Image 1: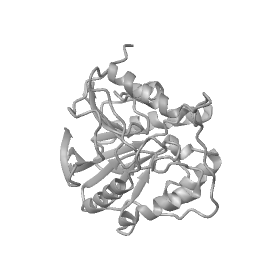
Image 2 (image 1 turned 45 degrees about the vertical axis):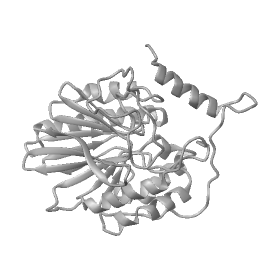
Image 3 (image 1 turned 180 degrees about the vertical axis):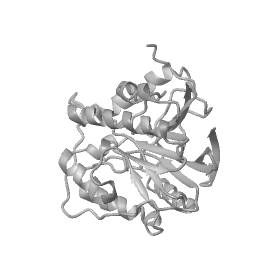
Length: 323
């Protein structure tokens, strides 16, 4: 595969920043703090509000990422914007925190999201790679302590007729073989049931790692393509992921593949000089913080991409409709 000059420059910049004077690579580590993780449990209930929000990658910049900016102010603006939408529910596709095994990160997350939590807006989350950061048992214990309504499930569904959202765990390196097989069987069963269910018209798939991206630091997730994309059924309208701290939208076989990693993590660039995939969004290499607002109108489903502007206002910059 040809590597564009822009991608080479970006990779060399990261490499130069990560290599220590001794010639070794900078290792990532964290010191775990002690204490309990607060919980937030508000379950989805029937609502007249036919709007929900999906976004991802709200984690803070790691101390080890010393060459990257901190975006605490921008993250706060995202949180306030989500609370202001007053949606029926919110789904974060992963990387909520930087160190999943550190309870302090989860306490800070809980405090930061008070504008949402004080309004009792149901909040769902998927597992990103940073949720597994550190000891996996501790990390998952913290995750499920904050979100008890997930009931210990790494993959689950959200029903919001006529929409079904299927939340999957794409951290295949962290899953046991039996978990990969169990998730796959469950996934196929959910898709088959949705095809038979007349009340479900739109199926949205979500996980953390993007099957397709023009990112300058992350490649396409081949396991996501193999285990998830290859199994999609006719009612699957969109596949929403994160991991890449940017916004991208690709269309394949009539399905919208959306990369939405603009929740507050340090922004990263996508290749606009020689992209591997055709991006339906014609933006610059760096795309700003954003979220996806879905609106149900009868049997139809529309998505608006709302992005933070330089003057700190919010603007719809892209979108699509599911028939």
